[in-house]
Each structure stands twice: as structure tokens, then as C-alpha cells.
Image (cartoon, rainbow, N blue to C red; front, side):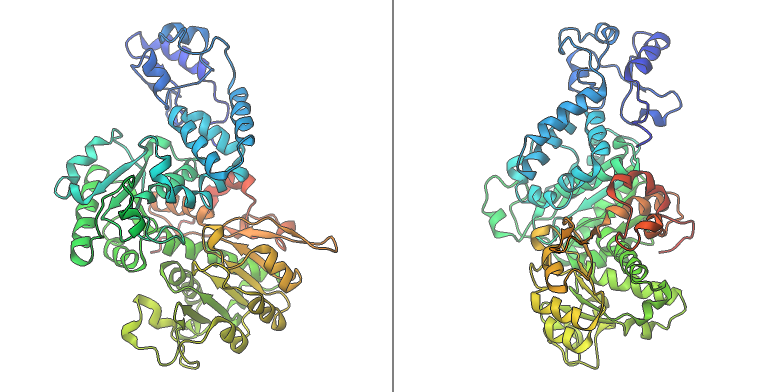
Length: 546
């Protein structure tokens, strides 16, 4: 249970505050106030200001004394109800809603009016609601943000604001921000350029930071930098919330981001900046430019790499192997963008840290992009960033996925392509011909963009595969009654730990798989989501590492 929600006694804390705080500085318990020694937070609000302030609003929980003292008698229903009754009401309403996107909208509206109740519901029903608050449903929320937008939860910095960004930061009321999650909407999950509609990603990510990582919600800031969009559908949509122009590119883009970085780090010098869902070229360029200047990381490159490495190591253990056997694995990866390169780079770094020569480590990979295998004959000038390090010299460039699987006989197949269904039945059957327990990791999000489904893997490998996906899939029960368990290989397990490490300046990620009880390790890679919040603090170490 999140520490801020355990043993919350709104009325008791507020009555004590009113008793000793005088009549002018009314105090109300907010979601994160238990972090303060006093256990309360100040507010001068009265009347409808109290009811309409989501950080103070207690719904139907206000006591008779509070209703009188805060001038809200008659402004809320007469029944005084405990928090758990309000949770029951919300859950009942959620269960009556059929479409995930409608559940998402319902929950976001709850967040708009009652922060404590939103996070109480999310924490107590995390495994059911995490896929609603974040992937896969958040992808749909981004696609339709212009229709479901109701209220500001973060900040937008657009091309209209060039030269004014530093002063703009003071429009945000909070003096102390721990983490800023920022996107330019350039590559939202596997959905491509969604421009300003990508704001749902930082909002959802920070919902998980609070529920799972224990951050104070007032210390988080979702941001979208709107440099335009090249999405024709959005440009032609009069309801689109963003700037109706083509994207900034090259030096103009870098100057825009430079002004933004200077602005937010001046206003909040201790905040950690998390880059989220930038296009591949910009993602690598910004990380390389700022990683040594500011406290920042790229979630798609570094967190995805971290959790994928954890999956690969856990799959070794599930097959009765040791982590030292990783060098014997043959890894085929479909997807050579920021996430794919981040994953492979993280695995290579792990091997190098264990004393393996880097050339030998790179030789364990066969990487494909939309042109096929990055192999012999591919011009160097056609390769982006670190793709050249994974270029094969023993196989011709352009080989298709099935051809590569036949030639390489991989033990591990990873998908970060955003291309639905490319792990075909032929590919999966070919994998299982040569490996007793093939490891299949279709990691593209949302689930509609997954390279394959759990059912397809179970069918074509006869349930022998070890499976983990980016978006959740239910475990598959076979005709003989056996179950092929599924895992969700998602950054949700790593980014709270990465942030803890970054904020304490001691941050590397480790221990993700070690939090799984030993009796579950042959089936599950990570702690079940029901236990997620209680394990976040374990997922970082004290060793400083870029």
C-alpha cells in the first residue's frame, strides 16, 4: 500500500489542524501531505473552492465539523461516508462501463475532482487499472485526445512560445517538482506522430509514478513540447489541440528544445527530466546532448533496455540456465529504432560489464529494420546512430524475418517494430523447431501493434514458449488443461526505480527479476502487478552509472 494512503484519517488530521492553526490558515489533508512531519497541508480555501480543489476535496467524507468550519455545509450530500465506501462507488461505476477508453475518461475525470480518491482506487486495483491508465488504453486516448480533453493536467510549450518559455514556467503553481515527463509526440507507442495529442502519455506515466513509485502528485509535471506535426489527419482536423503546422526540424528543433531545457531547469533545478516517445533521431540526439548536462534519461532507450534485459535474464533462469549463459544466446530483434537499439545496447553493456569483449557481445545479435536484416551490403550512410555496431558481415542485407530465423536458429526473438503480426505462424513454428523453449518477446505497444498474440505463440509453439509482451495478454489455457503463462515486459517495472536512483544521484537499475518469489520463477518474470507498488524501492542500486 502506498505510504500516503495507509491509515489516512482526513477528518482527524484536519480537525487537529483547525484546532491549533487558527481560523485564517485552514489546513486540509491532501494526498501527499503525510510526507510532511505535520501530516497536514495548508489551505485558505472555503466554500466551493474546497469542493472544486481536487487536492483538498474529500467527496462525501467531510465531517460535520469540517463542513461547518470550511463553509461547505449544504454544498455536499448530508451523508458522511468513509473513503472505502467512495472507492466502492467508483469501482461499481467502472464495472458498468464496457469500453476501456470510456473507463479511461471516467478515471481522468475522477482525478480532476478528487486526487486522493483517484489514487486510492488505482493503488487498490492496480493490476486491473494500470492497462486503463496506461498502455494499451492510453494509446487510444492519444488518438482521440481532441475529443476527450476536459481539463489541463500539465503544460504545453509550442512554437508560438519561443522566447517566452522561461517566464511561462512560472504559470505552473508548484515551486518544487521532482520529475518532468516530456514528449514531443513524434513517436507515440507504435502509433507514430500524434503531435500535441501525445500529452496523454506523460499524464499516464506520472499516474503510475505516484501509484507505484510513491511520488507526491504535486511534485510531478506532464509536458508536451509542440513543434508541429506531420500527421495529415491531425493537420486537417479543426478540433486538433496542437499547432497546425509541419514539425520543426534540424537546428530549429534543437534550438527550441534548448530553450525549453534552459527554462525548466532554471525554474526546477532539481527535477529529473524523462524524455518519452520522441522520434528515433531526436531521441538519441537529445539524450547524447543533455545526459551529461542535466539530470535526465530517455525512457524508451534506457528503461525499455533495462526491462528487456531483465526479461532475457529471467528467461535464462526459467530454462534452468544461469545469467552467465547469456553469451550463448542467439538474439534476433525486429525493430531498429530507439527502443530496439536501447534494448540491444543494454544487453551488450551487461555482457561487457561481465568481462565479455564488445565485439563478441555484438555478435550475439541479428537486427532487422523495415528493409530487412542489417547485414552485408547495407551502405554505412543508410544506418542511424548505433545501428552500424549491429551490422552483420556473414549474412546479406535485406533478408526477411523468416529467412533470418531459419538461418540463425535463434533462442530469443524480440519485437520492437510496431508492425502488427510480423511474428507469423511460420516464424513461430520455425523458432520452436530448433529450441525446446523459445523465448518470444513481442514488445510493441499498444496491443493492436503487437508482433503476435499470446494465443498465437501458444498455438504455434504448443505452449512451450516463454512469453512476455509490451501490453498485457491473458495467460492461455491449452486443451490438456496446462497453462502458458504470460508476462508483461513493460517499463512500468523500471522507470520508478530509475527515477529513485536519479534523484539520489545513485541510479542504476537492478533487482527487477530478483523480486519474484522463487516458487514462481519458472512462470513469471516479474512481481505480479498486485505487488508492484511495494517493490519499486528495490529496483535500483547505489552504483552510479550512465
